Length: 272
Image (tube, rainbow, N blue to C red; front, top):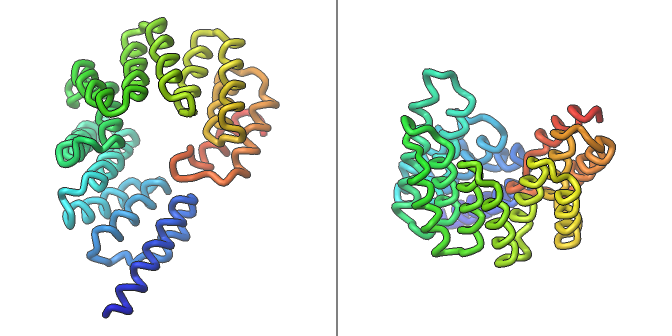
């Protein structure tokens, strides 16, 4: 029994490594789909979610939560899976699925108030969901204040999102620049500023921020993807966008980066 347990633990560790390297099929191949183990079901669910099978993702993540209801990460990922189902379902199913996502995010924060990923997901839900689905600006602002207490730079980043929601773009820019000053190595804040400037039509300033980001994090896959996405949306310098996306597709991305399928879609959109 101890030998079998060691083998399962080793398989789970290898499967987790493959997941982190975005080899979701390879990760799934190592996992027992009929296992009662919450950690195994959690990883199976995440693999299905990242592969785009949102129904299977919720099925396995529900099993993980049933086995460990006070695990904040399990609750958070279940919320993400229900959120994806809500985004891709019909108008009749979407509200119920969205409510399940919200309840999972709220539960994740309830059982671990310091879970930053769960707080971020709950903030985004409250900010973007309509009131009849449990969203609301005031709710989002309350979560942003909690995040700021844990991480001032991230709190400023969330404040910029609140500013954009009410079309206060000047304040949004100010808060993003303050976030970058607080955490100068955070490439996500730099990307957000570059995107904001691009949306405002301040192309040269946006390109300067992307260049700043490249100096900060040379070869960052997230930066390459974001830069290409902006260029394609604005229908300019498509050759550069195609070059960036081809580099992205050859980069060793992780599960935290945009999916390769999305990069391939953008590349086709750019004529590559």
